[in-house]
Image (cartoon, rainbow, N blue to C red):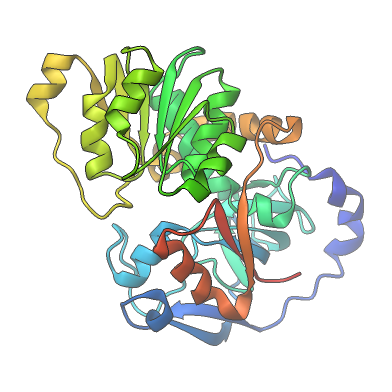
Length: 350
């Protein structure tokens, strides 16, 4: 059950009758496939009406996610018909509710996830939004849903990470990588982070990584073996694929779990079945997006845990920079470059 944010609860009764929803809004739409700067168009479109079981959210901020880049290119596993609105998660305030919605009310500050939210208003299933932790700013809370739930389900549900285990995180200065580092530390794991440059190493260390290796500078396999005294990584969190996956198979521990989270490096590796057998480790897939549909009972566990960790200070999303709504393509271009640290956030309304 969604609990109202304490900062808005007192004002809900006063605002429910006063919220005026316009007929039209601005939305970024993919009108042709390509790189974000070429694919996106800022258009005026009707404000959607929330259907039964849905809420209409006045969007405050949307983080750039790698799936947004893939959506623009037509390379994501979901391929909406052109033109369509990208953006897969948000933070904002409920502006209207559809029939049958009782767990959230107008005025509640929420985070949520659905393809199509890079706009001034967005309609989402009520089950897909939850109370934004009051301890987080809009820029911080915007990126909480996808990255942190992905990391939480990967580490706790799929890999069963235990206190004291060695956790190897690739792209440890990126959005989902930093989430995995922070959640790993909170779970009592010893974290080794792999980053793309010296400039990013400090960010991973600040997030709690005990050892940080720089890709293409340090020997990742040798570095992991040295840090763990030859034991290897008990759990590998890999959103990169390609060479990162290959290196992981060479430094994973006996009965280790290699989490396949994504392929931001552009190469989808093949699983070496013979090697998996001989070294006695597991390759585990993680598609967080399936859980709301297949195991919705587990979603509330993750949300409760993440809110508790945020309010305790153990979880703090890192924001690289914020761009205004009318410059949204810049955020996706920056993310695609691989030069950012943490999240690039698009401020829709202040």
